[in-house]
Length: 343
Image (cartoon, rainbow, N blue to C red; front, side, top):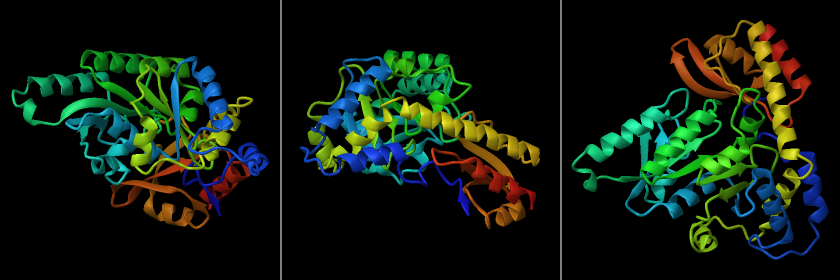
């Protein structure tokens, strides 16, 4: 059976795995102080065009979201997120567990629109009882979104302006950032993201690493004693080399973007298969996640040969399912999908 369940169904990209094996016997200091972590940080600074960016490696996306949000916010503040945002819907209350409320706002194709954010904040401050409410202290976006959609340069610019106006931190979840950067339909590059956001992270787990995310603070704003706060939250790896070596490999010879471009190319071919088989799309995604609507009987038959992810019910007879491509997706995998849809 082939699997399109997610972009982390396979282990590390061979080039990443090779570097892990090559460095395995080398004695290195812990907690992210090794030379590979430092080399990876310098390569990421060059990639984003910010030589003074502060970077910290964490083991996964939930850890990155919970640690960043809980260390940046004051105890009376919450984080604004789309109702469909990852921290709202797929992190099992991890943010609330830190003591901070997720302040949900309506979404449009997975995104917070600038006008929605502006209306929410205007209404919040117009409420004479707002001193008795959770203060908004941060805006959380994911790029791509949970539906594989992308923010435009104009949208992110306007959201950044609104955050400055209301003194909010703008935090971008980049668990799948590579696929946004490699999309054929984006006008938003990494330099703009780094300039417009206060903090974001570059996802490794879903883009060729065994695990790991690179959290990037862009305004000299990494919380004081951040390493101590990370450890206090149980998120500090003693063997920091694990993430350092992987990110050093990902940002050598353009590997991060090569992986991402490959996945985008596979997703575009997959779109062609769905169209040729008359399968409707739930949403038009320009990234590696594709969402289609299947009749339940067809879905059950397809599941005998191909793995994919349940997303949501549309009615009693139809279901939205997700197919994701990644570094390990091959043309043979797509051929198997095409044949299974034919049956």
